[in-house]
Length: 289
Image 1 (cartoon, one colour):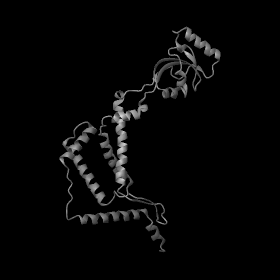
Image 2 (spheres, helix red, strand yellow):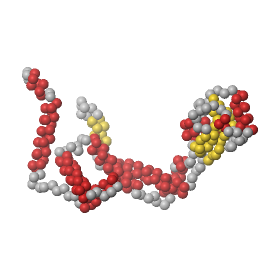
Image 3 (cartoon, helix red, strand yellow):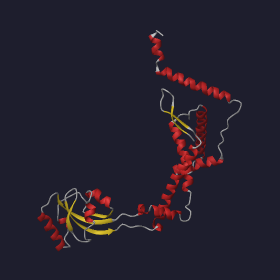
């Protein structure tokens, strides 16, 4: 082909788009002609209308008017028409989004059954015993602190501590330096305390005598005097105390096991051949049923 103008014309994206569109139209016409001997029926049942009404009420917190319900039904019909014609054209084939959605729906069906299961006598107790440490509550501490600066002198630390110990009613806010750090923390877990004052701060104040000012306690910001106000030790609960949480976790674990078993059964019906080389077409990995 020696005509440059013709070559440019054949490379035009618009021409490609028209050609592809024409191919789809031709394919649809063939399929449509093949089905002219029978008329497809789209049946909108009272049950489906009830579902549409419920969905509308869930979104708008009111029932649809007659006109709104008519529009909902029209949209349902429109969706079904496009859905059926898309399937007829094979638009669901080799579509990653469609495949992923269908997989999710299949897994959802399996999981739904799992979450409706009830443990047999003794099964929940056995699960709790095997996973007991996961339900152990963390210790918590409440305390107040005075920030003395990045590197206060030993005399400053000692004098401030003696003042607090000899004058229990003295306002702690009159001592120390200004800081954006909280003067008090309510009952908090170790990781929450360390997230504010730096790693290792909790382990230092956990050793202090409750209700007494002590220090120096070192944080990532500098030196502090600390008084613990309240503490709750770690607690291993009884099953009755965490029954709802344990049941939910058991059902989640059951769903995971059931999904794996369901897939294994489905997978056993197929032989998978994996072509890793495009050049030879040789099957280098074959997984039998």
